[in-house]
Image 1 (spheres, rainbow, N blue to C red):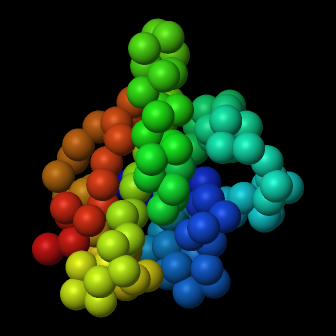
Image 2: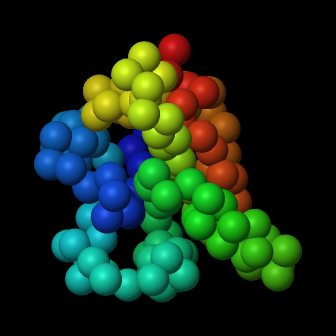
Length: 123
């Protein structure tokens, strides 16, 4: 099962986008969507309107938005977070992000309304 992803500006590097597409995912970057300078709220609303899961490294801001939406009784299609600690052994690169998404998909976890740190799926 492929994922419909909206890739935030901080995560739309060519290598990652190419690898996600090669893995069979439907990938749309913020730039391609014409949302490069849009606020995080606008990006989240766009993702909801287009039934896309957001992939971002902007963990704090997007987690706050997702939490607020759920508190208001609104739904989203999922939020995938990549935490960066500036530590070479802990931080994820394009290859480990692809692997984490593959592991997440194997878990058969429902992504709707979920905020998931991909770092925990990098095994």
